[in-house]
Length: 257
Image 1 (tube, helix red, strand yellow):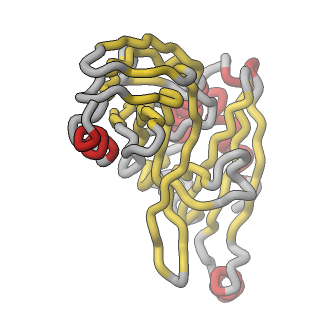
Image 2 (cartoon, rainbow, N blue to C red):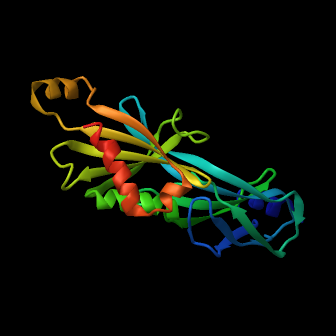
Image 3 (cartoon, rainbow, N blue to C red):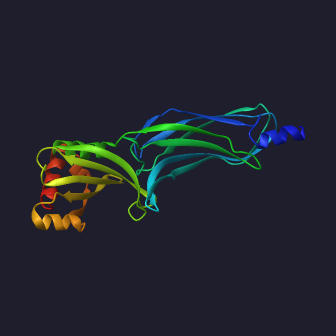
């Protein structure tokens, strides 16, 4: 093993390679991700401290009156402990893990990806990145269908910095809707945050009332035209379907306009 080859491997030339093949490119929050990781040794022997999978996304944070994009690690999974990877060796490692319930949905500009990495001492760590298509869970779909029944149109989905609301994450995913019929003229927008809780689902609704009259204009100018409402939907509520959930949402929203 020449000194020159070891130096090249330390900066990534002729070093180990990693590639992940996902069996589940489309997943749901709280679902399962599975696949296989292929590792190929480089030109020299290398000590691998561990192989890991990370689920990552971007979120927006304001800094000095500027919006900047930051990266968050949603979950991290250990595949192997340390081992020695021989030159040219080819290894495969199958995996299957439960995904977190607060995994963001990949709608509009929101993206989620899997990053596979090898921790190699004194070297550039090889990595591989694969996009995940995250679709709403059954319970989330029921609520989204209910909001659609009430005549709201999805305008934007964003991951926004909010550590006090994000639980174990520094951000929340915000669904922003605008009214198109019944609540048109009464609301500017409806913002919804989803908090899956096993067999139930908690919603945080931000109801932004449209300014009406002089008092409404002052209220809007002072930022007091918004109401925040927490709504807990248990399994028995969700099993009744979207139309039943829509009736409940309509009652709640109507009380705050």
